[in-house]
Length: 264
Image 1: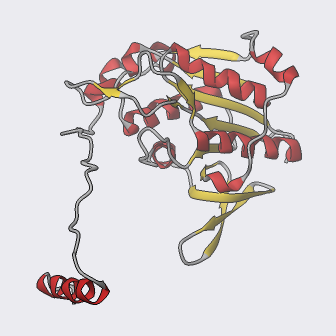
Image 2: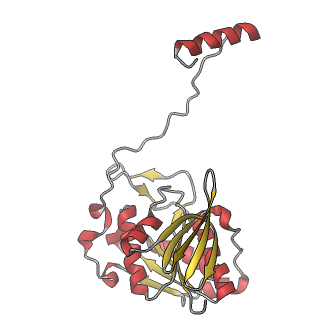
């Protein structure tokens, strides 16, 4: 399919488990924390590049975050992505998944014609798996989630989904949104030639709220309907009871305890 245009939504996520939260907003404090490309977004990029090699597509990566989030775009440029769009503005700060998806959808529309939007199944920092489907909702597009294979036909894609008890094939008309899992492929390593091209800045476009023509009242923490009531670290202390005696005595004691809580 000549002239295919693919958008891949990617995200910079914390590269460490040692992340603090703001006690007032309960949001992650990302300043000073090293960032990496979200793992399943890397699979989405690889899926886009495979379609590019087979069908002659143009691939654009899109990300939202602070200026340093542009590092993940340089990384995908080095993999072979053609261009990237960085959405960065203080007005975006604190956006939940719904507002994030809204901002991404406005940017996709501004970017021009597209045929396919690819996303990773979820981000490892939030693990909501909501942004891809919410983009589809804002743009009134068909969506397929948990993709493990994508086959392109003329004007359509057929997607394989491996579910808990069956394998499902879904055929949808383009344009469409697809979220992929890590089982869809093995992402390639960046090439030296692409690394050199990625660093010259010519592939990157930066947009803010004014570029998207979205009022500040529809952006950021204040516009986000999600409310985080409390964040806490689970208690990892081992709990249990050591039952004394030999094997027969321990088995008999265990049976009585299970009967006492109505398990048996």
